Structure formats: C-alpha cells, structure tokens
Image 1 (cartoon, helix red, strand yellow):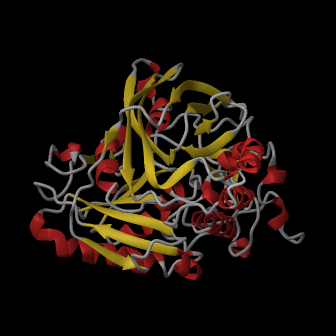
Image 2 (cartoon, protein in one colour):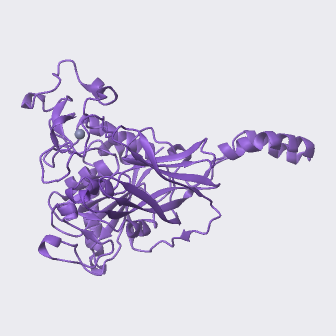
Image 3 (tube, protein in one colour):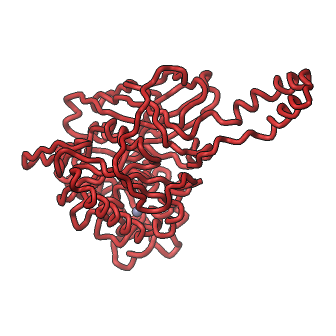
Length: 443
Ligand SMILES: [Zn+2]
C-alpha cells in the first residue's frame, strides 16, 4: 500500500561504494558475495502491480480440479513487503508462490470459493460444475512456482495445481475501466491502509448519485460498528460507479432478469436471499481501476440479501433497511474470514463442517483444538459450555450451536453480528479477528 520502490538493503552500499572508487576487483568480489543476498532481500515483487491469476475450479462432492485460464496484470495493487505472509491461517484454499526449486515460499494467501459451498449442496452429489475464480498477488520479478492448495478435512493442505510462471511470459494487460469514483473515506494518497473498493452493480448511468449516497450510508454504518469505529485511520474507502444497462438485479424466483455489469443474482444455490455473482472475472476487471485489498459489490435493489466469500468479494443489496448490517456481516466473511455463528436457517449445506476437525475460522470451534481459539478469553466465572441465558449475554463463553449445526459446533457469544442482524454488534472474538486483519493490511 505504499508506492515507493523497495529501498536497497545496507549490503548493496558496499557494492555501490566500490564502483565509485573504480575498484573493480573489489566490486566483483563484493558482487559475488552480495548479489544473491541483494536479489533475495531486495524483494521478489513489484507491489504496485498485480499478477491476476484467473482459474477454474470444477468437479463435484467427491473430486475437484483446478485449471489456470489466464494470467493477467493490472496496476493499483499497492501491497507491501509486510503483506506477503499473513499471521493468520484462514481459508479453505491457499495460493503459494515459491522459488522454482520450492525451497522458499515468497507469498501466501488463503481464500474461499463459491465452488466449495456448492460442493456441500445436494446437487453436487450427482453432477459436476465449474466456477470462475481469481486470486491477485503482487507481480513477481522472477520466475516462480504457482501452487493452489486445498485444506482437507484433516486440516492438512493438498496441492491441486502447480506450474511455473515467468514474468517474461506474454500475459494479458488490463486497461482499467474509467467510471466516476468518489473517495468515501480517507484520502487518495497511496499509503499503508486497508483499501476497500465499493463497486456499483445494477445502477444505470442516471443512478450514479444514488449509488454514491447508498455507499456513503453503508460506510457511515460501518464506522459506527466496533471495531471499525476505532480503525478509521487505517482504512481508505473508494466507491466506483460502474454503470449497468438496466437497473436492479436478477430475481429468478420472480422470473425477473436484468442486464447488469456484473451479472448478480438472488437465489444462489436455491437460497432466495443468497445474492451473489458468478462473474468473478468481470468484477476483478472493474476493480483493477483502484487499490483493492477487499472488494464490495453494492447491488441496486431493495430486496434483502447478500454474500461474502473470504478473499473473493463481499456483496449486498443496497436498498433494504437491514442492508448495512448485512454488509457488515458479509465483510466478516469476505474480509476477515469469520464463520457463520447461526445454525438454524434455510441454508442447505449438509455437513459443511466436520465435527472431528477444528475449523480454521477464528470464531467457531468443534472443541477439537479449542486451545488455539478463544479459550483464554473466557473468565473463570463463566460456565463452559455456557447456558443460553440472558445472564450471559455480555460475556465471552462457549455457546453450543454455530456453523449451520445446532450440536457439536460452538460460538463465543450469545449473539453476534455473525449470528444475527439483530445483534448489537460483533462479539469480542470477532472484533479481535477483524482488528487483526485490518492491521495486517495497513502495515
Ligand atoms: Zn462473533
């Protein structure tokens, strides 16, 4: 998130000084010794532009395949060398960029997919489907191995695709779209901030101002919600008014279909309120115009709904009275890797979480490895498991029922934004997790 090139480490000074004094022999001697160190520590990436990896995940409940569709590059990545290895291990998948000999891992990023959610539906038991995915990394300056890995139910990662990428390969260069853009919060000066990018979906060219108003309403609500209220100085928010030919979004249950920029739709996987877009690559095409640590798609409809997939994007309708609360919940998934703390709903995932494995989500536990979750945040006076009593509504405890299951999966609080829109806000565990992620992107 800062634009300056990586400064040379002290080692290089010796080389430069030697050249100045024309002491070639000394310079050669130093270069032999120091250049490999310099290449390694100078940084392996250009953090101002992205390597965008478009790939397809396909398969069914039993098997999956990952296939690279295209390598692309776009400006405005603005990551930093401090963001190559997160200090949290979230996501059902991860991408690794390693040296060609695989001895050094240069970059790692966890992510989730709509494909894995679909794999948990009944449909996936008898048919195969393919999903478009995208992951962006800083642009490698040397040849790297690109590996995609899947987190098995045991918690171990399995490599599902690996291949060499060379920066000299001819790749597609994205020429970013140019739509009216407003800085909703912060300033446009590239700096060490979490960059949120809100994209308009289903707004026509005459509805640009409506979009900016809707985006501002969302942001205002976001900053009223802890922990975002105290993280304001670490966040920049831009809104880009992408225009659609038609206003609104697809509503399959009412047979309403709209020609919109990002093809958003309700009724994803047969759940009416599940608003999503399968046009991932289009969304990332538009997002290339600005820095984007996380993308939010704001859909021009009054109907309730949304979705959030970790390190993919968050999406929500803009016009429902609960829209801002939904967005804050979905960003819990999309930005911070939080799991759902609810367990009774129309969502039709069967066995999404394995009760014999500790989920990677920071805010839910199967008690398989509770030590590494929030155990140390529970006061001695709070019984474990914690009864569903009003008496415990403001404490951190261990409440049974979470992750779409009434039994065997536990959550940290009686209520939380990851459980219900009616909750006052996030529980302590979710607050700490969000703070950790925002701090990572702003360092
Ligand atoms: Zn929570």
